[in-house]
Image (cartoon, rainbow, N blue to C red; front, top):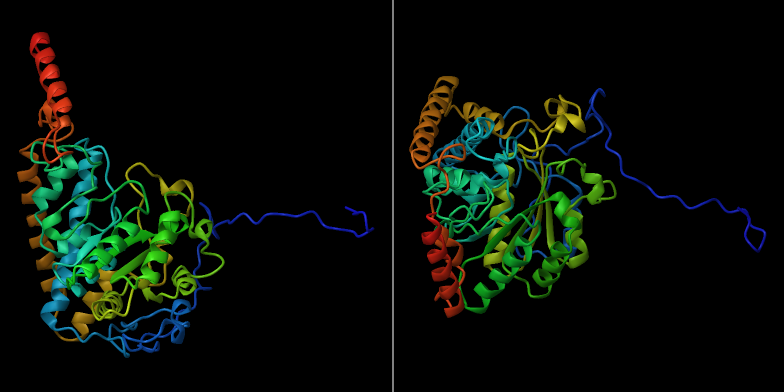
Length: 423
C-alpha cells in the first residue's frame, strides 16, 4: 500500500493468541524453564514493592525433585501440620471424585473438580487464621474442607436437596458458609475481588485484626473488577491477599487470551505498586510460605499482596466441558510441576514420617468418610429424585430481614391461588 507521501506501507495485522498444542499434537513442556527449588530470595514482609520487582518473573519453589524442602521460603512446618495439609488435599480430591460420579449418575446437574490444584486452597487455608475471610472462586472447595466444614452440608448444596441451607438458589458448587469465613461463590467472575478488598478495608476501618483473601482464575484478570480491586487495594493498602490461579486454561481458551503470552499474571501487581509473588502452585510448601508471608504483611499494615499460583487444570473445566475438543488428551501428564499430593507424600517419606502403607490406609479412611457423608446427604434427596423440598413460599424469603408488606401480600395471594388450584 502506498500512502500520499509515496511510502510503501504494510497492512496492519492483529495477533490472535493460539495455544502451542491442539488435540492430536505431541506435547512437550521443555521450553518451560523454572528456577531451582530454594533459589529465590525471601524479602522481609515490610519490603517496599519497588525493591522486589523481580519476584513476579521468577517462581518461588520449596520442594526439590527429591522431596527435600530447601531455601529461604521453607516454612519448616511440623509433621502434624504437613499431614493436615496432605489429608486436606486427599480429602478434597476424593470428595471431588464422588461428586463427579454423582453428576454422571444424574444426582445433580453440574459439578467442577479442582484436581491438581488442591494445594492452592488447602495449603493457603492452613497459612491463614481460621477467622480470616475468604472470597473464593468456584474451584476452592478445599478451603471449606481444610477448615473442617461438614461434607454433608457441602453435598446437600450440590444436590439442592431438603438439607441445602441455600434452598436451591445457588448453582451446585457455589457454596456459602459464613461460619467458615467462606463468602458466597458467584458465577459472575471477578466480583469477589472488589468484595474482598472492601471487606478488608472495613476490617481495617473498624480496627479489627482479620484480613481477607480472594481467588480468581487467570482469565478473570481481564475483567474490570480485577483492576478496580487492585486500584483500591493499592491506594488504601488494604489488608488483603489477591490470588490468581493460573491453571493454563479457561473453559476452552488458554491463558494467552488473558494476556499470558505477554508477561506473567503476577506482573499485573507491579503497575499498581502492590507486592507481587509468583509461586509454584503444585508445591504445597511454597503456597503455604507465600500465603504466610502475605498474611503477615497484611496484618502488619504493609498492604496487599498479589500471588500468581502457577498450576494446571488436570481435568475438564466442569461437567459441561469436553477438554478433548481443544487440548491434547495427555497434556496434563506432561506438565512439569507434578502432582501436589504426590509431592507432599514424597516429602513426608523423605523425612521418615510417612510410607506407602500409611498413605494407603489414610486414603481408605477418607474414601469411607466421603462415602458415609454421601449416603447421609442423599437421604435428603438428589436431583433425579425429590431434591427440591423447600416450599413455594421460600421465593419471597431471605431477601429482607423483615418482609415488606407488598411481598407479604404477594406471598399470601399466591398461597391462596395454589390452595384453590390444589397445588
